Image 1 (cartoon, rainbow, N blue to C red):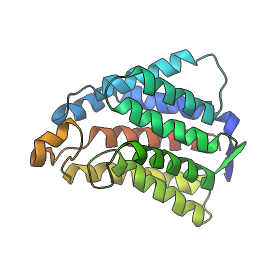
Image 2 (cartoon, rainbow, N blue to C red):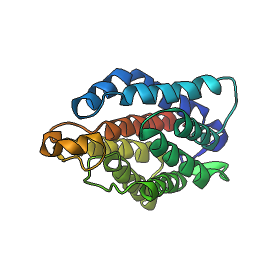
Image 3 (cartoon, helix red, strand yellow):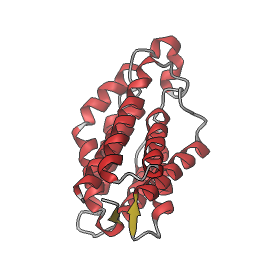
Image 4 (cartoon, rainbow, N blue to C red):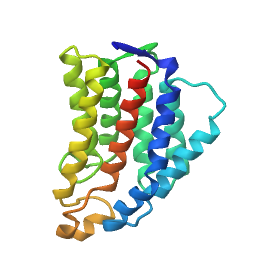
Length: 212
């Protein structure tokens, strides 16, 4: 599959919602080890509000990202609402004018989300945050596009990059957020944001694959 239709993107968003809902407890457990334990609850709240509010509406991939971003930005607590809200809204803006989305386009959308995130947080790769998941995923899709790969190859590669990025946070020391106060004691545990980002990206990849 070289491209998918932007207008057909609603199932991708619903896949992302289900990914978060199915992992609410797991994300809470991960967060509870070095954080305050509410990451799963907050993410589930935001994604479920989006699902229910737009359940009966038709929307494109980019419209769904925009609407989900607005819900997360405005209606869930903690730092993750603005973080994910920014990522999704920047992705939406980058792809809003597209009728067909190619691997290259999707890579550009992910890169716009990462760039938007880096505009509001100082975290970079190695700081034990969701950047450790998102950044290598962007690189993977960009590399697939440069190699002329279609979604059938690009999406499994992105999932592998996201999983490796998530797993890399286990050996890192937290530098941001509540867990940063633990210093070396934060080592040995996955970062909750990196974990939820992996779930979202893998769900996104699976949703895109099912459009083929």
